[in-house]
Length: 213
Image 1 (tube, rainbow, N blue to C red):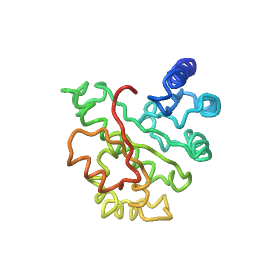
Image 2 (image 1 turned 135 degrees about the vertical axis):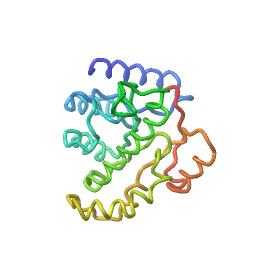
Image 3 (image 1 turned 60 degrees about the vertical axis):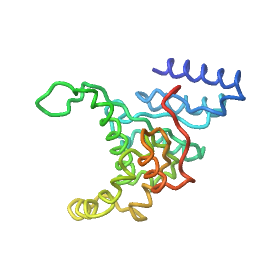
Image 4 (image 1 turned 90 degrees about the vertical axis):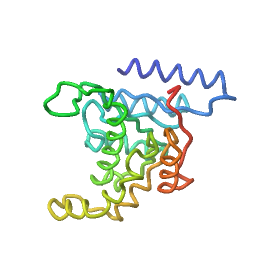
């Protein structure tokens, strides 16, 4: 994984160097199966290849992004003041219902990816990660479900969770943390885009497309 990440990053850096009029910068691929290796590659990509962020997937090898093993990466990226680009991943091996063996109709992608992003954002907020590390996180699909369902996450549902299992004390209102994320414009309808715009504001919207990665 480390060798492949290095190969990808070297190729991307070379592409940018050849076409500076077309590409401004890039986010580095990281071998997240080995956090120590990921830290070394992030440092190399940023300091040697002049990359301006890193790409991470959620879940990460089946692990949530609020797992403590990933905290050193968050500390590093906060110190660089550079963003993490968060992209979802899920395949058809995750069934839609317990009695099935796989996801049908590619719903693992069309719906599952949006859910994965939303889940990761909520875990980063409720676990206190964003309290601990001042991260810049760019979310694919413009914050996924958060702009639409923020009220459910910051209202009664959160209050009930805190009443029954108050393990995390946040220093600010929950909604403030969700508005700290950035959203890209890789959406499929104008109303969805405007919903994201209304939630994040123009200052936290970045242009984004799916291809090329």
